[in-house]
Image (cartoon, rainbow, N blue to C red):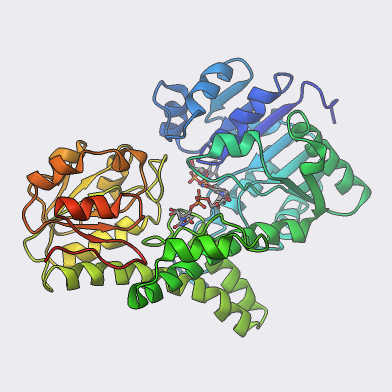
Length: 460
Ligand code: NAD
Ligand code: UDX
């Protein structure tokens, strides 16, 4: 292996993780040459253009600063592999949709293709880093593929899961709570782990670079996501009880979160969690538990998903009950379609399921979102119903019977709701799936307000 300086870093997979992560490495480490490759030529072309394929605050500036300096995008995967010292694999690992484990297990086909391609193209020793989120013990499968020929090329497989959240990816990468590196506890494994730690040490304090064994590292990623999602399902389950008892879920969360053993973060009751990770990773955890015969453990974690499904169904039920048990022919405006604010990503967004349910109820939908309308169009393609996509929230809300807030975009807090109220069909309803608007004020304007986990404020 070459010296640690001037090394070639390759990332396979130019997505939400590969793009920002490598841009940050290139930005912090001008002494390394970083290349990102992808099988999707369109995606690579977008990374090279003025309009990046993903919206992430702060990303444009960093990419603009390093692109062509020490960050490069390419579709030539073979060349990338040949020239690389360290290869990050950041391909997608979605839930399997076919065969054994369908609907639960991780689909490792993209992952395995990458492993085979590395084996085929590598002519010198490589460190291969699992950046994707993977089932525990995947490194073993990777090693078996990489060690399946006697080419003389040596590979060391490391686990280095990514903990960034979308919308805050740049700050999460710049200032991570921790960087986790799992390696085989052999001399060469530990040496490879140190080489990877050296990259992060360019900007991450040493005490936040955690090294461990490879299986614990792989499993920690699934567990971190499961714990985060569990907090949301816990507070969401309590929000329904609040609605029955006239308690206020925000007050309960505040009181509970001030216990420093619990902490205040991730206790915002909502219409449900979305995103490409939580559901997929918990399903994967459940599948692994079942595989090892731990059925009670599997059931425990599966309940986190069940409550999330319940929460979305409950939201639509609340709308139906409030609006005189029929939505047929009513114009309903969804404020937001992204799974959270500050991203255009709609993967597994609660808005998708809610939109589909509302269409089943024969509502006429109008969707507005500052970043996610293109993805929303794709998500609802082929759905048989009356759906419009309108960028301007005032125009979108005009004539509506109800607004349902799906995403906590700051813009939605700052709108002129007096103006919106006057433009709507009366009686006007607002269902705040994120508890982001001033409920009392809107009630005084004349809205019938339905927050999450708080008493409804009606004028009927
Ligand atoms: P993504 O779908 O945005 O990107 C994956 C990219 O890999 C795609 O562009 C795809 O074309 C490419 N790809 C697939 N197979 C390939 C191959 N054989 N060769 C080259 N390129 C290939 O996915 P993502 O959101 O970036 O997630 C990647 C991984 O990171 C997943 O395992 C995910 O669970 C994990 N993760 C995601 C997040 C997140 O916030 N999105 C956070 C932490 C971890
Ligand atoms: C998550 C993890 O946070 C991140 O560490 C991991 O690397 C990838 O998965 P992400 O899905 O991008 O990140 O966003 P996150 O902020 O975790 O939000 C996930 C979902 O939970 C969103 O729909 C969000 O709106 C929802 N959420 C979050 C709540 O409903 N309530 C909360 O209190 C927090």
